[in-house]
Amino acid sequence: MKKLNRDFFAKDTETVAKELLGKVLCRKKDNKIYRGLIVETEAYTQDDPACHAFGGISRRCESLFKKPGTAYVYLIYGMHHCVNLVTDKEEYGSGVLIRALEPLEYVENSNGPAKLCKSMDITKKLDGCDTMQEDSPIWIESGLIIKDKDIIQTTRIGISKAADLRRRFYIKNNKWVSKK
DNA sequence: GATAAGATGTTA
DNA sequence: AACATCTTATCA
Image (cartoon, rainbow, N blue to C red; front, side, top):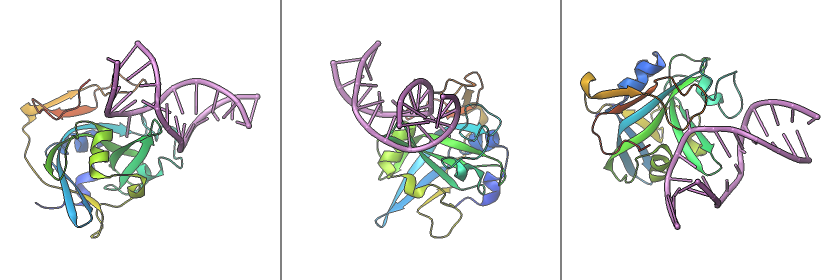
């Protein structure tokens, strides 16, 4: 498997969200490399009221404004972590939320955005981490080619603002996609 | 300083 | 359908 380069992330956020399906999220910890196939994503951009970067930069979401390929990790509901990958260009707050993984190596029970962070030990310590760095503890590798006919595009989950936008993508008939 | 809401998951 | 649990944004 080959590590993705920055050009992959330096594109329109919805395009990256769609293309991340079938890629592999990797997390190195204690000499073990956890791997999971990305099966569900959501796109968030600065002009979207549901995005943390809507209205500009803040301490929490500052990572969204960094270079494409940066990891953005935040805490939600006081107890759950979620991870995004920054997209498009630097200084523009946008990213793709990883919502679900199909377990490959050392990963289990990852059919939800908080569950996958728990099973890979992704915490705020990884916020702002540049996945392009050679020694990064988290990165993305190429994986499967997903055909267009196997990709479903629909509305996002768990948000109240801009709930009608169809910015969620998942692999059709994959059992690890989060349930409503 | 106080308050409300939040890109969720588990339990019943 | 309730709740666990706390950071962040917003307002005073």
